[in-house]
Length: 193
Image (cartoon, rainbow, N blue to C red; front, side, top):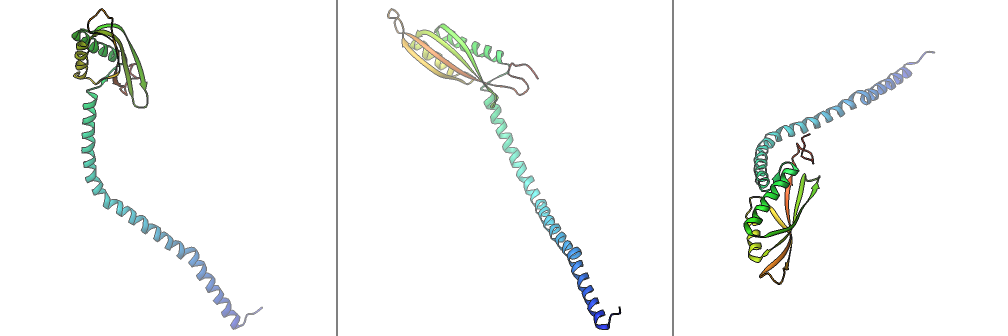
């Protein structure tokens, strides 16, 4: 079967159209997509690069703020107890008992309770006291607690009239709260990991 001149031209024209469409679909369009993707990635990276000196300048500002906040944290830590649980309890007992002796109040009962908050790395120590004494002695004791170099909070205070035979006698129930920051290097028992 022989093709005439007109059929040959039509066949060549159809072949040319198929080659053009195929090359556009498989070569030209992927190249254009790649160029657009490459250009957008390039622009994004260029913008990041332009922002990096600004980030470095801001980084120094943030480092300064971090140093200031760490300084404040260390200042606050100086007002709290730190260390092993038993040592902190002994320190608290020593401080409060010294203030009690200086004030002249008599201890009738005392105990310690400990609460741990794992999320905040804090241990709250409650020193619960039952005392007898006079109002002036109680005021002196409270003033000593207020002036202590550690942060001691009077969490609960109940004052009742004492025996009728004692002049100006009071019965006092008192709960003092102290905060212990748990070191990350030690576990809850105070033992190193």
